[in-house]
Image (cartoon, rainbow, N blue to C red; front, side):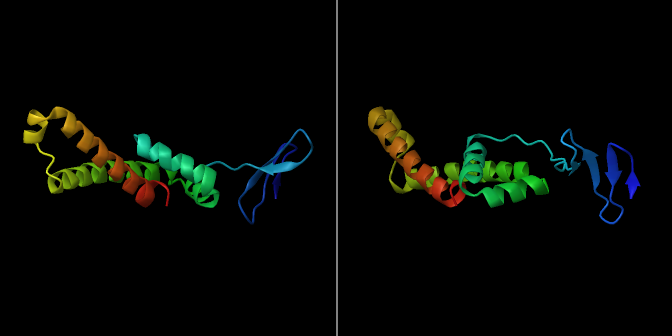
Length: 129
């Protein structure tokens, strides 16, 4: 073992240790570097869910350096699903630009209803699973 009064490295494991104020040697552990990603509302919702309800998965992603990548992918997938499902529901239910120009209030009601339903689908399939 390579030793000094404050630090030593276990040659078998390669782990270095630092002497704490309490007199214990604690491992010098750091999280791996993660690339920076833009994380939006869906990624933040997923992070909160994982941190509060799926701690083992959260910790695994965090310690493997894949948490930000996972959150970014959830965010991108959720946004694209939101757009796709909203347009599909609107088309199927006859919510068109013509309806928007003829009866704007009805169009807003229908689109709000569609967005709420799509949000529930996204939450169930991507965020809270």
